[in-house]
Length: 121
Length: 121
Image 1 (cartoon, each protein chain N blue to C red):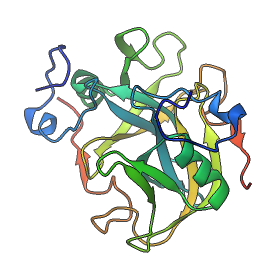
Image 2: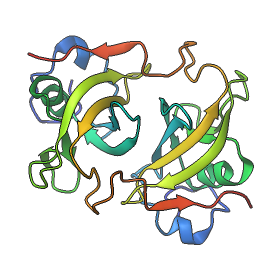
Image 3: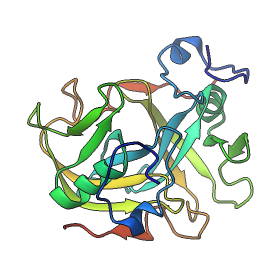
């Protein structure tokens, strides 16, 4: 059961541990492997996780375009995969990557640079 | 429109920028503010984000228990909020925290320590 109607070559032992949302996806956090910066959050189905594990290039499922999306294929701002881990519940992926250039489509280094919220009352 | 039937005191200017999933929630990444460790991923609705911004304690919506969950209230492993940012699309929250003790219910420091996946074919 992959949670989507898309076929996947993901290792069944990994697929069995994945707990997907109703849309068949899990959130995937991309983190710069050496500085620790949280770069962005994307979404993966089984096949995107399989491609991320086996190609060395971070691959997401685009919810808006409904297609696989190899980060950097258009922008050149690739993410070379250093390590991949599931969380304790199997419902989130953490990918440590080496990010070329800006992770954010706005040109910012990370997707979290521009909108820091005020704390307090 | 909060995307849930739970009332919220979240600043309307922030609520207007939030892009919630079908369940009214956004993923929230908790990161140790000084070391950069990604500790865990939880979920927030508008009110959980409001409480996180205004109480100084990271607060999530528990999808399984369907209730607000102040991290550490049971375990003592609190998360003191240092900063909160939205991503460029308004569909993910990054909370930098000072984590007391283990972030993971298993006793591990982070929820991503135990299940590192093999890379390659």
